[in-house]
Image (cartoon, rainbow, N blue to C red; front, side, top):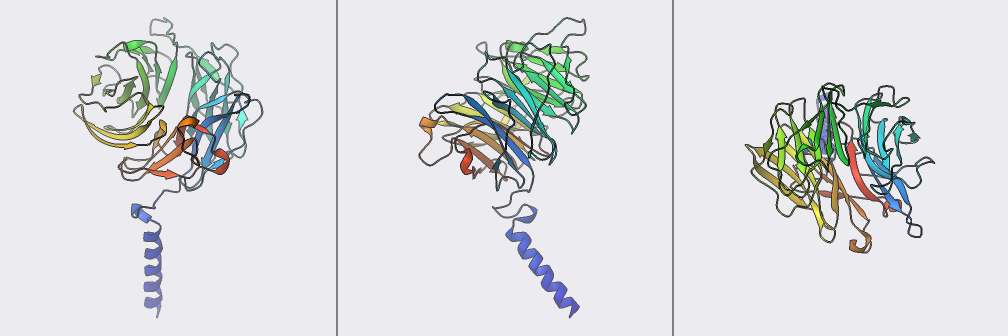
Length: 378
């Protein structure tokens, strides 16, 4: 009798496990992880921007729009960094590159409440472009004009970090687009600096240097960066479909042999391992962009590419070599009736297929820019 009951229980468990896609089986399987996406909406009458943050606690089966505190009027959401189920950081900036205003938000209760943090007085620009949460207490941030900030107390105090060479020569940045941090390695891209547009510190921000990327064409510049470990980093250049990488902490750089055709800008890249890179490409206004998972071997690409028309893809957050989320938005005039301005997509088969997740009704007018999941590299 006991054996029969145990057998029936085991059969029922297996049925439920398979039905829910347990262990990665089944096309409906989505890991029950927490993630945030950030962007903005615009008032139809005034044109004023409003920060928008969406959260999921179940891998994107359900997304919910969160409440933003007062003091964020006119800002846009530039970046988001998920630390754990309760803690996340957000970077805010003005509506355009000339606007020097912005701030940092942090939540420690899963987004029920977000708090504006106090920034140092001495900053070139308070337009915060990127943020990377290292733990519940430590984070790095960078402004549009290259102010580097660091906190180790949850943002109660943000310290301005001097950016200078070993010879104490200052390094100035004109237009920051992306930052990434792994342990003591901090990488920033300055899109107006040409082949020397990658700025790097290997010692937690004490000493900095400009890296030199080879064979950049047509006076283009680095646009986004992803760091896998202290030795391996990847960089994409605006308007070029190639990838650059270093395997020795920036001492030497390689340029891929292959490129992805039909590219505009890789607005986000993220390495899930030493040779697999996830890409969000914005494409063009009318046709949208694509997401790609690229395995780079000896400079050659093995790529899975997926068109996300009509959305221009802007952010990607891979949880593994197989699973990732990506977000993008489209201009209202190119959005079919009944569709939201933005799309959130999930893949569980290495980017071969992407499933469109459901936007909440109150977020149909949101332009999504970046996404971050707990446990992911981005």
